[in-house]
Image (cartoon, rainbow, N blue to C red; front, side, top):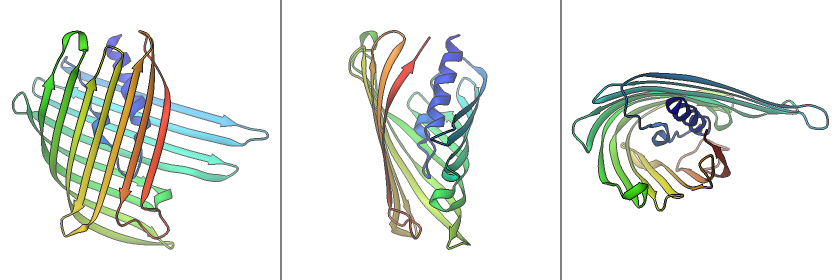
Length: 257
């Protein structure tokens, strides 16, 4: 039952992670048992009458854990339409292999494919590898004052098929990708988390992307938690007609049973 709850919660994280830049730190899970885990979600929100609207979303998650390695696949698709006008049409599939070398050092490789029609990205393909090291892994008593800080860095090849004025344009880049991730359990009921990515083009350092995300979780009871999250994405060289930033604020309730 606990495994099932952990998996369902991870799928909710996946369904909220679709942007032109995917925060892969939110796709990681901590499970101590070895073995295979899988799951699938499908959501449909529809309104008819004075307001016409529908929202379709799907998510899939596959994990395979061994003693010193973890292989996972995460995917998501989302489509929104209101009064025959598209509001969203995007999706991604991410596959990652992580190998633990010692208690604090891991190496990993990944591939990813995604698209976002509203950002004029017909497709984006990524192939990368890197390493991550645990800078702090401090555990307090009864999960009070826990601190988990991780730094990761690596390289990735990026290919984009872009939609510019109705015509396709192809762009290939080699990027560096670095990130700093932190989770703090301040008290038994309050936790903070954040992650920041920096991804410059190695051929032109003036071309880069920055993604930052910060969240706050308040545990109201053993069942209910309140969650607030801020997500900011900056692209120094967006496509014509596309803003160079996206800012999102969300708040909601998490139910555990």
